Each structure stands twice: as structure tokens, then as C-alpha cells.
Length: 402
Ligand SMILES: [Ca+2]
Image (cartoon, rainbow, N blue to C red; front, side, top):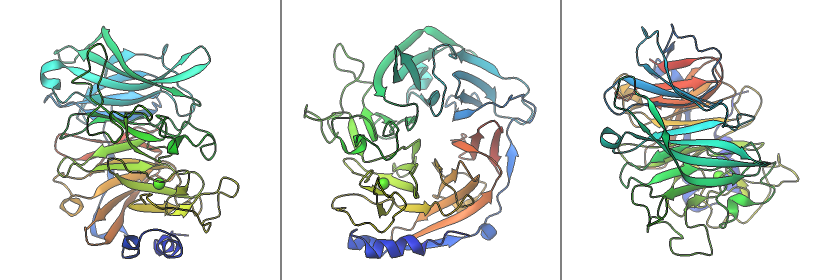
């Protein structure tokens, strides 16, 4: 059964969301107008069932992908189907915990990478019986291939993780403010058992924002003055937005500056959100457009107080195993190959391998186009220097949309 988007619109009508949403029309299209296929990016590299968690294109003209594997290995290879060589930048398998959803999860290049050669990582370690997310910075050599200077690693920020699930994992610099944005999940457990995503004293279930380029004296970062709780020590001052379950992947539209996030759902709904400063995205009061009940998680008609909560731009429901149940956020498209996709947000689903393009015309019409239905377990997307889109998988390789 194919999910019909008007279903969510009808539920909105019976719910308590703002009247603005009632004006929204969702148009679901198949891909007949856009011909998309996928091809292996590295057909001659032995990827050995690598569980790819992140792929970033180097911003220095070296034509290199940097590829993170969940187990803690970072490697680089030239972006060519003729590539036969990959170079390991580091092997952190001994220090990174790679189990369930934990591991090496995120990578970002410094906005001034050309001069400082800094990269930033998001990964999980175990200390005694506790799991921690570490955000660290490393320096690369200017050689080709580059090498990591291991002694350069500095821990900038850390977050206690109660479970090895719903750990978020994205890190990215804002294209306009150069702050470092970090996604955290609610920390795991069914239905956010400790209500961490709504707890403004917890860093979990959030998008965080810190300034690592202008740290306070004696610290590794500072709080941007524009953060909603900057200067308010009653709350976590790093919070930028909250009410998120597991925003595993987010990205900035390089042209509009908008922050797009895919928030992985619980039992009912996968969300695409436009994240705004100070926004509360609902979890666990709501899942997608629906009030959430921990005791009856499939009841989509429950009533709750959704005042001041921000609904997703779009959701798809867990109808059956063919409908998708774990969103993988992607990137807005600004490449050359598919003019029809210009400005659309390209994202996918881990479980079904579907890839869609989502557009908002700004006048209340949201269009979701299925671009292709692959057989791949899509974990993450990447963009090359021409704006073309790729994705990594759990053990099935790396592919390019073309
Ligand atoms: Ca939400």
C-alpha cells in the first residue's frame, strides 16, 4: 500500500495545529518526470561490507571523499570510478564504541580548512560503564593524500549518552555564522522515557550550536550570543532547537542557509523539519503531525496540547514494511545534472532504499517526488564540489545519483 499524503493532512485537520498548516497541500509524485539512476562510486575498491556512516567531499580541490565507517575507520579516495586506492587516515577501532547506532558518526571540515587543515569528528566512546559522544578536532597534513596528525586531537565537547541508540551524530558548520551545529538524539529507549528532548537542561534530543572558532578563555568553545538560552544558566546554553527524537542527519542549504533535518520516528512517522533557532519540534509530545502516547504509540488520533510546537514540513507514515520507517536526511540539490531537482531536498529511507526530492514552493504547496527505489540500506548522503549527490550504505557500497 502506498502512503497517501492527504492522510496526514486529514489528521492535521482533526488536530490542534495552527491554521497555517490547514492551508498546506501535499503533492505526491512518482518520478516519471525525473530520470534518476544510481551507479557505484568506487566500483574497483574492495569496500569489504563497510558500514558507511558519513561521506564528506574535501573542500580543497583535491577531488577527495572522506569516508567514515561506523567502526571507527576514516579513509579517503579520489572521486573517480577508476579509483583503485583508498588511504586510511586513522583507525580508531580501539577507542570508538561501535555497537547498535553508536560509532564514528560525523565529520565536518573547518570553514577555513584551506588554511588551518582542521577537521571535526563526532564519535562515541565508553568510559567505565558510560557512553559519551565526543566532538573533537584534528589537524591534517597538506600532503596528497593527507595524513592525520594524531597528537593534534583535541576534545571540544562531550555529551553523556544513556544508550547506544538515538545518538544523533551530525556535525556541520553554519554557512553564514560559522558556528558548529551538533545533532543529538533523545538518548534512546522507547518513547524518550526520561523526556529528555523536552528537557531544556539536557543536551539530548536537540540541535546544539557552539562557537569553536572563538572560544572563551580557557575553554574549547563559546556560546553564540544568538542562542535562545545564551546567558541563562538555568538551561543548557548550547541549545539551538529541541523536541527532536533522533535527527541523525541534517544539512544546511548552501544557497538559502536553511537547516533541513530528517528526524527518525518511533512507531508511526518519519519527519523532515526546517530547523529554526529556538524551535520546539514536538517530540515526545508529538510524533510528526500526531500526538504521541507512550502507552498507545500507534494511536494517531490522541489529542494533546501542541501549542507552540513546530510541525514538520513533511512526514511519511509507517504503513507497512514497504513504506519506509527510518528517514535518512540528505541535502538540497544545487547540481547541474538534474535541473528539475534544483532546490529540492533529496533524502531517503534506510529501510526501503527509496530516495525522494522534497520541495516547498513557499505558497503552501509541498511536493514530494520519489526519484528512485533502490535496494540499499541508505545511511547517509554526500555532495561533491559540483553539487551532485551520493549516498553511503550499510555494507552495500557507495553510490551516485545520475
Ligand atoms: Ca517533530
